[in-house]
Image 1 (cartoon, helix red, strand yellow):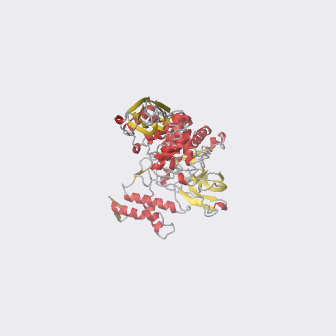
Image 2 (cartoon, rainbow, N blue to C red):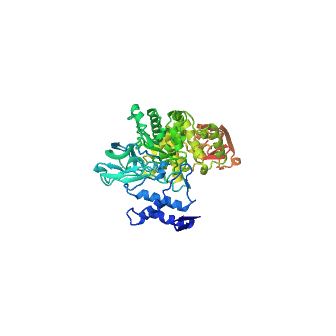
Image 3 (cartoon, helix red, strand yellow):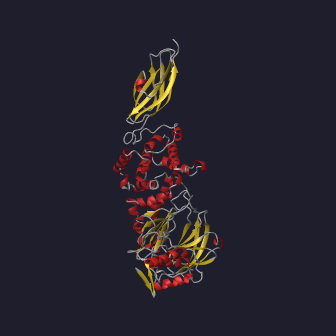
Amino acid sequence: MEHSHGAITLSDEQASTIGTCLSPLISFVPYDYPDFWSRLHHVVNSSGWTIIDAQYGHEFGQDPLEDTLLTIESGIISVMPPSLIPSHPSHAEFPGVIQASSPRIQENITFHSNQTGLPSQFGYSQARSMILLSTGLYAPPGEQVFATMPSDLIDSGAMLQVGVHSDTLWHKSTIYRFPSIVRSFTIESANISIANAFGGPIYLAVPPEGPLGSTWINFDGAVKAPKYEHGETTSSDWQSIRDYPAPWAEVSSDQFIMSVPSSEIRTLDNPEDLMDFWEQALEMEHDLYGFTPWPRIERAVFDVQISAGWMHSGYPFMAHLASASGAVDLSHMESEGDWGMFHELGHNHQWMPSTLPGTTETGCNFASVYLMEELVGTSGHSATTSEQRHQRMTNYFGSGADIGDWSVWVALDTYLIIKEEWGWAPITDALTVYYTLPNSEVPYTDLEEFNAWVVHLSDTSGYNLAPYHEAWGFPLTNETHDSLLHLPVWVDDPVRGNYAVFDSIIRNMSASYVTSTSANLLWDVYDNGTDTQITVYYGDSDHGESESSWPSSEYQGTAQVGSASILLEDLSPSTTYHARIKASNSNGQIWFGPITWTTSGP
């Protein structure tokens, strides 16, 4: 393919080479650099601005020259001073149009915020992102909005941001909106102007390190956007606010904020009840993961296209437009819920040291299961039915319980069995332990993470869960086993005998009441295993694990947890005896002992 402009004709290869050379320059060359941007601007003006059709999209690689022009356009509007920024025609496709007749207003906005960022160990949450504080105002595409503010905001690290659809799409093969449509402005003086070629909601973005407190900014030239503030916006006020002209709206509480197309809330009559639901959902998630008080208000933004998946975690967490209508429909949320939204918010609550290998998509589902069951009143996902779980576990244990295959749904089964025995409390309490661990106790390797979790969950449940997790393939160390011996073993778990055969554990073997011809042999069955049969072997020599070599044995039946004993009689006086116990089941044999004792003289 050839690309012609005037007398110049470029091949695909030449157009691609130009794009490759320009891309890094566009990212750092300042706008006032002589001749660079002016020439690129001339190219764009001559060729025309690219319109990304929201239905058909733009396929990268099909026309290298068009791709290069798209890169140039993005560079121009990302560095151009606000006074020069044009209205990019793609804004009409997304995020939307502001009518020329919509009033441009002046309004003083007061901010009160005690939000901070999250600890960085919340690794899927974009924990250290700038905190976005809403204004309820919208910058029209290509129009300046003037901002006046107090001097304490100057060089404070705070910024003004225009636009909320912060996912960039340059890595996608096909795009359905312009790849980058958010622009931020540093506050270098008490009077600045801001603009965005695509328009967008206006935010004060503040650093995550500490709470902002209170401040104000006066905006001039913006358009009002629908904004419901839970506990502040009255029902009567909402009737007019929901008709404000901006194409994007917010419904918010002190726990959760959703940015949705204004068309989704024009007929919303019950924002108070809706945000009661979402506030409860967020509080339940915070409580489930045990990190309270949660230091920031979580955000969800709906977009025509996002950077990955159907939804993804972060700040804000991103979702496709198709999910917006359900998220603001209270009857839908109360009857159907939204597994995906609960799931992404769950991702934001995952603490890295307690997120075991293979469980990135598991720990977040704690929230989905919990909210679907307790808030919505339904299971919410076909993968959590008893039939599906039984089939998965049958396959997993039938294939040898390889920890390399332990992930997502199989891993969730491991946690759900714990939840079904004791509720969520032991899991919550175990997660909470990690938040205050000294650095010396934070697990880093896979082996450390598996072992630490079993120790903490055992402590919070009050039971030794090492045998249970070892059946799932957890690589547990002797140190872990030894550290939990003070707790009773959980011997009633549904994996035992149904999906896996557990070995018995016998300890505290001893001989007492020894006479010249008898001795009382005692032991404790700490873990009775699965259908374990107990046999005592004894004689005047230790014959190890060779059954046929022992001169005497006594079958003791099926192992039961607790203390056991047998009186051995007809012994010879003044003789040293040895004894071992064999515990056998379908896994094979395990021997315990030996112990020795000496009978008294005649």
